[in-house]
Structure formats: C-alpha cells, structure tokens
Image (cartoon, rainbow, N blue to C red; front, top):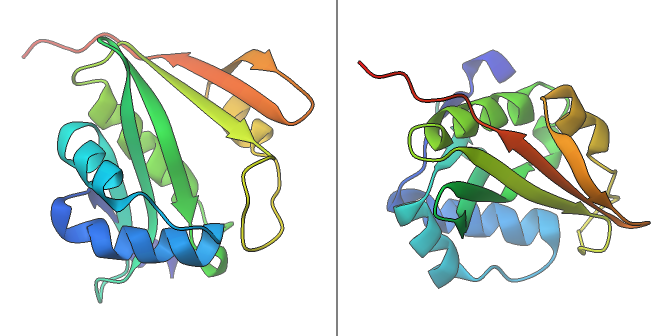
Length: 151
C-alpha cells in the first residue's frame, strides 16, 4: 500500500489538500497564504496515492540565506508507520540540498493536534539530525546538507 505512494515536489495545486490534511490532523486552521508562499519559494514535497489523494506533506521556510527551516512534516494518521515520513524527509533534504547548506527544525509537544502526539526525537536522530537545544517540551534539531555536486 505505501509502496504505491508517490513522493514528489509540491506545487500550488497541492495547497487545498495540504490545508485539508493540516486541519484534519492538527486541529487548527492553517495560514494558507503563508503556506502557499513557502511552497512556491522553498523546498516542499508531498506524498500522494495513485488516485491523487494527498496523504503527507513537508514544507519549509527560510531561516537564513543558506539555511532552510523545515516548518512542517505531516503524514495522515491512517498512513503512518509505513516509512512515508522517512521518504518525505529524504525527498525534502534532496530538494533543499540544491540551494541550502543546512536544515533547522523544531519539534514541540506544545503544538495542538487532533489526536495523541508522540515525540519525534528518535525519528530525527535516526535520520542524521543533531539536537541543538532541548527543553521539557521542545527540541531544536539541525542537520548539515552535503555540498551540491557540480554537473
């Protein structure tokens, strides 16, 4: 089932489905103009089923001229634990490496979600991120990106 999910760069056409999944899973209203702007300017990827249903996304925002902030990565509850998040993260990193030297992100238990939330610390550590700062409820991660290969 997860093998049929396609990971691809996000486009403006994906914004309505990104907003819908955001609302359903995070139980809050997304800032659609901001997300649309970020998807248009910075690395963003989606996970879609063969029928076009969006089941996950990852989008980013500028942190510094050469560092990108992974602003949100989300997989629909019914599609979790199938490596879709890992595939989204890898595709995002590959896109980001085209123009950026590093990634920063915050994982916090303080953000409201529709269902139970589990910390993602082991997920990010497993994918090569380092903890830069940790509090009782939040963790800031960083990861350098490989130098872009000249072709």
